[in-house]
Image 1 (cartoon, rainbow, N blue to C red):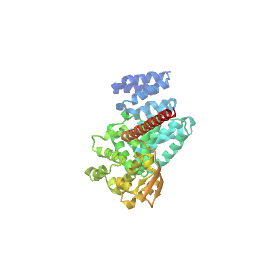
Image 2: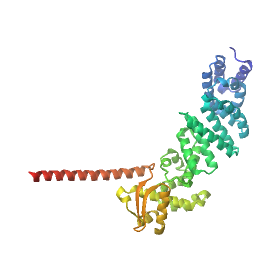
Image 3: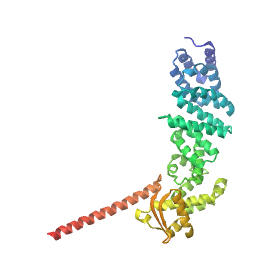
Image 4: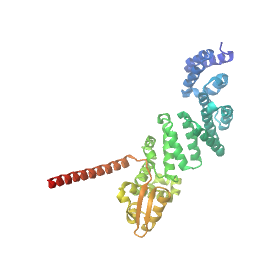
Length: 387
């Protein structure tokens, strides 16, 4: 088979026009002529890996890829057309370009993963063009398909969680953003993200952790390396603030909440009463967590008031709030002003908290050793007495 004259002419022109890609266009000619579609797809992906080639994608599709796209691996095709759609520079034009591909893939049970991948790209363009409802519809459809698949490529998960987190960011769904953004980070390598994108993600995760209803454990985020990208930046204080929450550091919070950096964040300033209540609840949980099983059985209102800085007559309300949120389980003795905690919500622990557990284990081990020595001494004494 000879290369189609139009295609041969196009590829030949590209070799002359773009000498830096001369070898790869020559490879295109050979592989296309030999009908080696897999190898041709691999060569195309090699070209895509070079950002300088992205301006060539629209004519490359129209004059070359379009001719043999049906022979391509469907995931590879979706990656190519998604990247090509970005070069159109208009989200509505991108939607017009991508939708026919999605329509073809939708009825193919063997290409569900490819359909999800292109649907998430369509959802992203809908979001950026202001169609929040359309974006939500695509996300919900993709979620159902992903739930039905036994396993998926990380790139598909990354695409889904990226657009999901961006949607919840746009709709101010802080808890949903928090969870989806962390799942996105678990699907990609941080090395593939720019410094700016890592810092933006870290900032948004911190904000959603603070403002999100029901988010009372930041351990997973505190241990994630993306948070370190804020160190040395103008948002380093936000990272520190999360650690203050996690350890129940009231002084640190009060100092930060009066700083100029904090006051320049209107979302945080307007939510200050909520943030204070959240800190009190997290301080209560941390206080319970640090205590032994015996100590948890008799927590006085006075101790709770002192550690959380809540007025004595408001302690009962705070504890009831913690109980209703499922942060702790137990009971309140109003007569004796005592709280008995039987369970505390499992937590992802930071290094300091792990160190605290280690210390408690050492203390427990010492007590056990002392008891064993005591029993051995008692047995020895009994044996001598019996003789």
